[in-house]
Length: 190
Image (cartoon, rainbow, N blue to C red; front, side, top):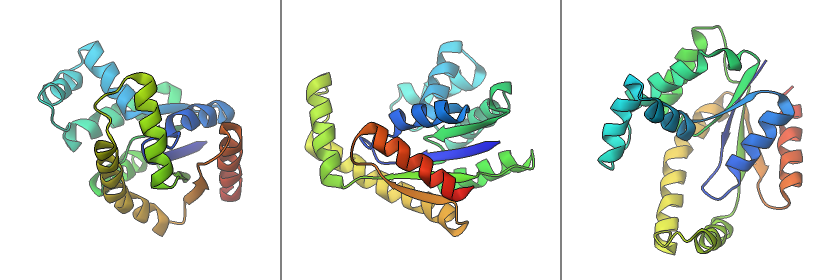
């Protein structure tokens, strides 16, 4: 069984790589964004609660997010493993994920960390904003999002680094090359 977490700054290709790695390993990719959307669309009690915060422009509290992840990780399709994308984002969420997995005598096997220089990310995200017509993705907004990512993710990565399960991978280059580097990083973990 393979239980993974993928982290990387906005624009690092994390979503693309999560899909590719999960397909190669035969495990389900679980994005917290997808979990939110599915619960909101499905009108679940958790979805209705999350929608109140989202509609008000606020962050969904850890308690709601944790319950959604707990529910998602209890579903049958994660029996052979999973690749989490977007959770945990805080130290408190790391504790909750440990508890969720601990209930089943499990733990994370590896944390795949995509690294990309901030200047490259700004360039990528500005280009994406231009292509997709995201007028609100200005350089200042992008730099702010990157600063928040570094600030919030550092604690999470440090917690997993203490366990020796972080595999840092250069996220620059051809998509296939990055996928190969991620798989090589996992092989080092085996």
